[in-house]
Image (cartoon, rainbow, N blue to C red; front, side, top):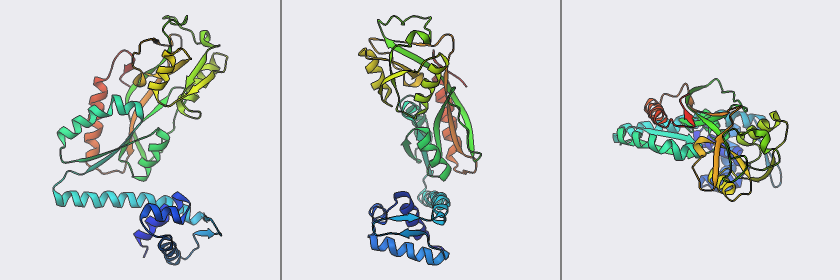
Length: 305
């Protein structure tokens, strides 16, 4: 019979790539981790790691077991917590993932509703871009997550997920207040020679900007990068460049002017996702709270989906 303690150790070793680092995270000695892995190998009847003088390399069997094992351990942890909550008279636990701009504009009000309606529930929050939180939803480490997709950077959703639209936000071009392009009939071509401020290379926001400019016949000259839209807007206010900012990340800032593209309006679409098989009874409450908050968030640059 497989030992769940040994399974957890194997998952951590694969994740960290090191017996020593896995031992540090789990609170074991390196020797104890090595012994647990050896016991696991005897139980399954196959060598799981290639051991070298100063490194280890997981075999394909170890990768497969770790992938499935992480999901099983997350489900077991959730079940264990539900049992404890039942015994202690609590209402359960909900683990939410979100991206930074939703963290400031949407999630706080949704959490306020949830904590008022479910005072006994334990709610945990994790923050990251969709590429970070989506795998955590799939493995069961998060119950649900807020994610986004740009018009020019569409996403495909794993079939295990239920995906519900929450809101659509316009993409706004931000320029310094006295910039010649600060007019209602802005054309992207007017910004061909500008320095741009973008999110980090490889992000959906940066890819959207590159594709948008390519459609207008030029490549953006990116001078600065930041995933913090407050930093991006401060750089625009300082006059060092222009930027493309989603409405949830936009705050009216002195010294700047923001407007959507009139000829080709673009949107970022916000969704809430969860595993269809997730039976957490708090999911419905959380999704309802998010929908109610997003309905009230509708404004000049934010619309229902």
